[in-house]
Length: 169
Image 1 (cartoon, helix red, strand yellow):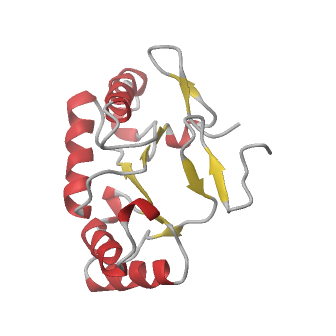
Image 2: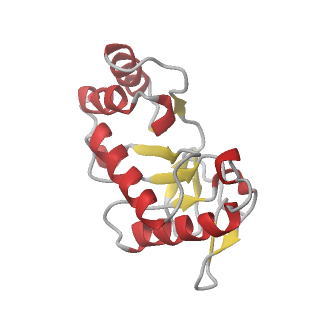
């Protein structure tokens, strides 16, 4: 696999390096529990921290990142858009809310947690199209998100300009 590197990372299509192994925070209580766990994970060598709005622990995760003392640019932080949020403006608001809770200036990766949720069963293609445009905006502005992925879509998907974003080949 040509995009698998000896330093324990994959290289994404846009040359962003993502650590192969990440520290997941699903079902981790917010506050001191999350903060301590994330801080200790970073101390143990984890550089990829994975959270999501629906985990309700982004405040503690962000605190743990800061408590670790490791410079932000040395870490890879992922969060996710939850199922009941779709559309252009709604996605941008949810992204900003995650950044605020994490108290970070940017995310390295933002995912659509579940691209065909029950809440949008009949209109998921249309609302995901608008969501996708918001993701493109976040990446194209270059300062708030380095990469996005369609999450559980499986494989790459084409954006409105014909470029593909998604998992490494």
